[in-house]
Image 1 (cartoon, rainbow, N blue to C red):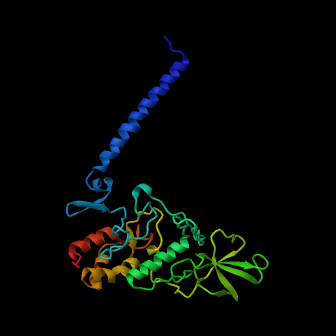
Image 2: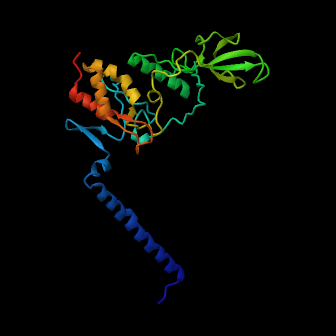
Image 3: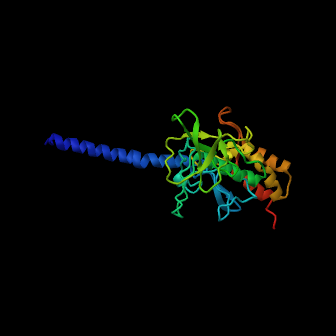
Amino acid sequence: MRLPSWIAAHLTALRAVILFTVLLGIAYPLVLVGIGQIPGLAGRADGSLVTFKGAKVGSARIGQLFTDNSGNPLVQYFQPRPSAAGDGYDPTSTSASNLGPESVVDTLPNPADSSDTGTQSLLTQVCSRSLAVGKLEGVDGSRPFCTSDGIGAVLGVFHRDGATGPVTRAVSLNQACPAKPFIARYRNTPVECARFGADYAKAVVTPIRGSAPARPRVPADAVTASGSGLDPQISVDYAHLQAPRIARERGTSVATVRRLIDKYTTGRALGFLGKPAVSVLPLNLALDRQFPKRAT
């Protein structure tokens, strides 16, 4: 007895669903799990977990914070680059800030709302981070287009003819009143502090370079987060910047710390992509093994 065509078609579809469920939903995952347990691959398949003194302390593929309960850097450890993943290096919330080079104007907090902290632009984030790193490492943390207190040095400049002509008014857009503007005058025009809710849409956004050196002491990866927010490495420049602090806290010489940095520095990807980088977690664990933190 021949089945009706519509029943035959449904049975064919059902057989296809069962077949591909078995192949792709059961067999294929099991094969991949089996491949992942091959010696040499098992560690990577399990997350490249790192063990120290019998305890799992992190992953070689995912960065982590070295801070105290208040979020302050632990001075005896190398610090990673900033992270925009969750509260920092959260693998379940990997992301970037999605802020670009044109993000230079902050959203000011509402003075009538104590819980409103405003929103920092990428420029102000970079400025504040650079200032904090400079203070931690005992170096000049100043950068071009940043104020001395770590805010984006940006003016909203009003011209008589719109975008051209004599300047009629200038506002420090990232300094909420009653703050004192970072410069007193711009083209012979007094600079005002910014007021929450004021309309500065017709102003020409004008970053002010300032007198900071062209090559800041604090490297770029110390003040910017990566695209994933999970980078386990930092630049060699950033590692060397931290070396004097680490040597002081660990009771050893800077030269010794730099030799450790060299040991945990990896070359360019494929020999030509990117720059050499330093793996932070293995380096910090090596410090704990060789130079335990001195009691205070």
